[in-house]
Length: 269
Image (cartoon, rainbow, N blue to C red; front, side):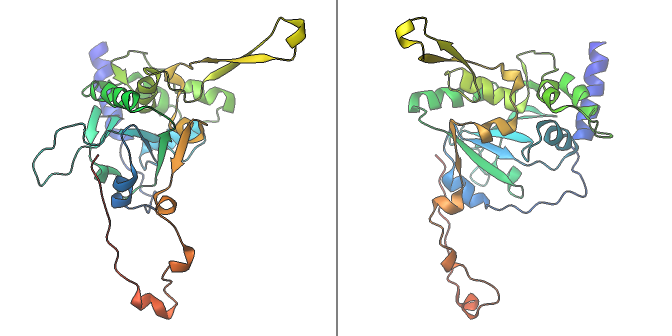
């Protein structure tokens, strides 16, 4: 029975990862700009264009349907003519894999950066995802997602997050957000923790309380959580590099023909 489930799951994975024809995107940030601004440990959110992206966007009510972690030059370079493998993601068909930034060059993306993460913990987070290269996607989640694709079923908002955690729970079968959430959990870095207020029993300090943080189960995290987390900064390369609207060369202005050429600086660390 397990082999049948695996076979059917593979077929569904092939179906769900097909791009949606009517989905067209124009990247707002170039691949060179992304590479110049990403740091190891950053989470790159992607607005996917596949069938499974439709389900994830619906269930999370978000633009973002996929997440990957930037690892910099942690992996050895291949041939000189090959692009470096700088992202680690959990892919529906291929499992946890390392890919180039070019995989998402034509898609909408967002950089989410953990604030204040120490260099030591940053390395531990990166090492965590690299150590799981080759693990497989939780195929049981595919059956759960498929039910909300054709047609998109009306699911109450309060249940949508739970519906993304219906897989086997097998730690060797990662999904994209779960993998990254576990990496940050390994160094006790918060994403969207549950916060409990405990009030003082001392009558003199009856109005005082402490905030106790509890780690939410990693299976409940979705790509949008890194976007809305108060502990992750949103990095927009265009703004970070000094945006000046007065310097734009508009097509209907005479100075557009005199716009200077710009060189793009990149980095691999």
